[in-house]
Amino acid sequence: MKTTLLILSIALLGVFLGSPVMGQVNNSGAITQNLSLGMPEVALLVASATTINLNLTTATAGLAVKSSVADSTARLKISSVITSATRTLSAVVSAVPGGTSLKLEAQAPNGNFGGTQGTFVSGGSVLPTTGSVSIITGIGSCYSGILTDDGYHLKYTWGLLDPASNYSAVRATGAGVTVVVTLTISAAV
Image (cartoon, rainbow, N blue to C red; front, side):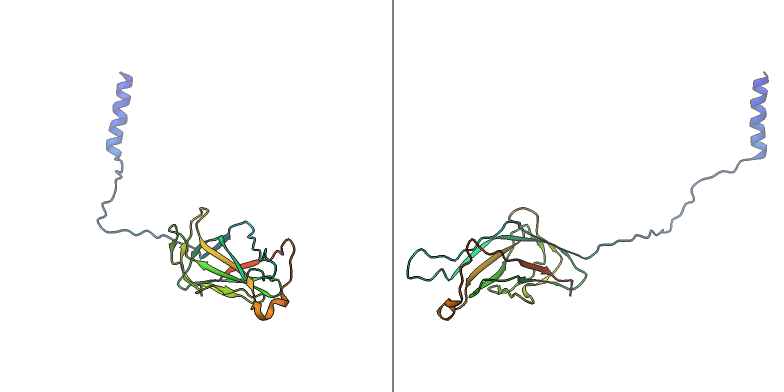
């Protein structure tokens, strides 16, 4: 009985003192939420890592060495995000043996490429040993994919400079001279 009286007293005390009721306010208007969205400019390049071997040779006495030799197995993978302008891919070579020149031609990537691939310099460009030369212009936001055959196809052609008048400047290189081609992608301009 004492327990029942205690429970009844607590219940009456709660009724007399009142308790605030809390609930959700019905807001039929709109609310806003601020978001901060960011994406930095991206300019990433990676070239296939193998050494490309180009050899000018002949096996017949009385003939000049081949006038040129080419290889298009190299790939250049790219990721580019720009603000509003475009980028340029340029190249320079560290050196070339006397009486010869090295030409680089970028060729269209395969179907895994997405975005604006740019405009290729027609026929390629002879690489200088100072300064640089444009290989692709107008590169926009794009990506090339990461598979072995993805990316721009790079065709290197090594050949004689005017063999009729400059053949005397050609020198043997033995097992081969390593030269370095530096590829640079510009900031968005």
